[in-house]
Length: 119
Length: 487
Image (cartoon, rainbow over all chains, first blue to last red; front, top):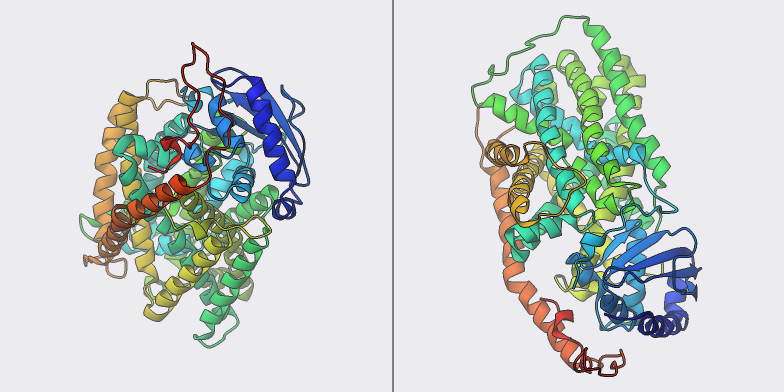
């Protein structure tokens, strides 16, 4: 199980990779969403605010009203944000669950696919 | 690891979510496509005149069983990937994948059929030469592809308005047509008028009128609460039943059947018979409106399925490539090309009723499998369901038998001649299923082996190793764990 500190490190790396990727920023330029995350094993929660494709912040706890809610094990989140796993495989096995529109779910996966195409 | 499905935040309020009216419109809109007008003709082929009404009613009652089955399965797996999950846990991952690939071909068939039918209807109203129908097909598919590639989506409320307009417009024109008939309905309860087996085939084709209504379960993740999808699954069939019954009654009494079974636009014939040119244009407008739902919903569902399959490693990776609008462009383009090819074959052969028979057969098969899933998962999944079918096991066993019989009834049907059995529908399905199975058994393992090889030679694990503690044992390995390699 991963603690918040590990998740925060993973999120920080993810934020740098996302915001530094020109193609991704262009692709997500019309995508502004609030994401909530829930660790199913530890109960840790955190949020991510995306504004026109740029991750503004990723604080602990739930902030604002979400557009998407993602639930998974803390280890899955850590590996996902470090780009060490393919989120679609976990999603299709039911190990990641999502509440939100299909379009937003695909956009979320697209981030991982664009910044880590070999994951 | 805890299964995330058990911790699904069902009570979490989303900023944008869909309620019962939108979900019902989505369900009814996915089911009620232009091909449904031909579905009614197929019912009339086996149930003479007003007998279509009890046939469509019985089909509707059976569909309520399907509603219960899919409500329970959707409650267990409220996900766009639901069908893969519950089929996978019932019959295994490979079979689930092969079935899902076959199921998805119905989307292509419906897109192709609708493109053809709308093209034929537009050409008919404009009194153009027959060959121009294919130009209209190409134009329609081109517009749909362009809109999809540019990331254009129908807003939820537009989809809702379109669906209720199509259903309401069809019902109103049918009522006007019925006024021409008065109360002189022919053959009101003649279920065996075309042979003993014809009643079963009539009900099987009636089932097709509701086909695809269960696809609303793919929107479960956006539903405000779990009962929203359940309510939609039970309300949408009632709306389709009303519109289809009225349409069948008007059609059977105002247009001779000899004109119907050779026509790709029975709705225009009814419009013409009921209100002249105004009625014809009315039905043409409704037909074109159905395209909005079919092309928007069909392209979206199928292209996202292709994207997910490619990301999972079950289709070649290029199918997951995204354009700058975050649209899987190769998936959308391939879908359009295959649909155009199927539409061309239909155009050249005139076998549009065969598409209805194939679609009806596949749906009956999927409903039988859904029933099987309920029986098996009642044993394997003990967790609470938001919806639990009353007398679920006996009803699901009944569903397996019933839908298997309907599968055979439609699989060997010939809607152009009720007294004749044809192997054409079942042959098409056998070919589709064989291709899917061969693909899953031969190509998918190679794709996965290639993915595994790529993963082995790719960059090392990025996540830094965790400092070892006695309680936790050794730190995570520096290469990615095998669980991340597609299985």
